[in-house]
Amino acid sequence: MARDPKTTPVIVSAVRTPIGKFMGGLSSLSAPQLGAAAIRAALERSGVERGDIDEAIMGNVVQAGVGQAPARQAAYHGGVPEDVPAFTVNKVCGSGLKAVM
Image (cartoon, rainbow, N blue to C red; front, side, top):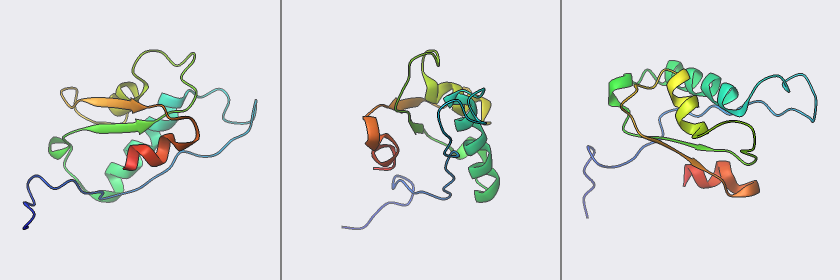
């Protein structure tokens, strides 16, 4: 079966958030703030027009204290247009991998 390039999902850039430690140097930043930095970098590296983004998906393991819809917060602050839907995957250790799937 032929794939329609207009409807086939693609990954055009990959950037991960930094790995920190409990109460370490990144502890003052929230997961959405770290996610926003990764999204900004992915958009810059890929050259994708922001208007071509259909959806934002982010894995987040511990959501306590980060507010509602962490993926939405990260996408918005990462430069994704307001009208683009976003959702957060919370699958404990597999959140990031599941978000890619």
